[in-house]
Image (tube, rainbow, N blue to C red; front, side, top):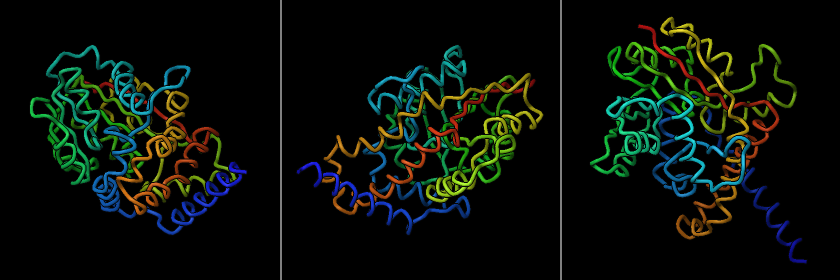
Length: 312
């Protein structure tokens, strides 16, 4: 008997969440809408409470296995460091973290690897929170900046690093060009991003088109690139020595989507902390997260890794 009540309550909550989801889209209009969205997500503290200091997916191993959600996120940073070869770089290496969020990756790069990190985001609230979370002795600083028009001169950093910022960039070619521009000759670009399947090879079908439209409109994304397409844009900057290296980490990161929803169940203190309005805000994200799981699980979306060395 009780299971039917529980299932009925779950169905009701999903209907409420889906209704909120449909009437409160955060469609991309300009970089200002991205900044506003992240300001709101940062200011209310809900995203940080459930996702921790890393506002990106986790790495669950190859093949993936069960892992604590927050641990998987910090593990992702270390796996990306190894994949990109940053673990072979000396202390004091200068790193630009593009789309730094509230500084989780920047702090790991500074504390665990001794790098001197500058994190940028388009959200003033994220800069404020990242600064609050970073001890004075940690060599990581943060500032508001636009990844499509970086304020740094050419040849400024040994490494340019970015996790899941690309989907918010309206001009993917400019995004690639700016990151390569501020790299020193011989410097290393390492990027992790949400991507879609290369629709030049296999066009999106009848159900994939509306799903992709929702994935874009709900979280202020102008477009996803494909792994193949973005690697071509990096190469087309004319600043790459050799070839762009890519990898697909879809399977390694896939459990993150369901785990992020599970956080709302295993951490009920959030309901007390943020109240009913916070609960509704959290519930509003569930349909998008489920669609993300569908997209990545069905081959519509892919998790791409990119690495390139700047030519001398």
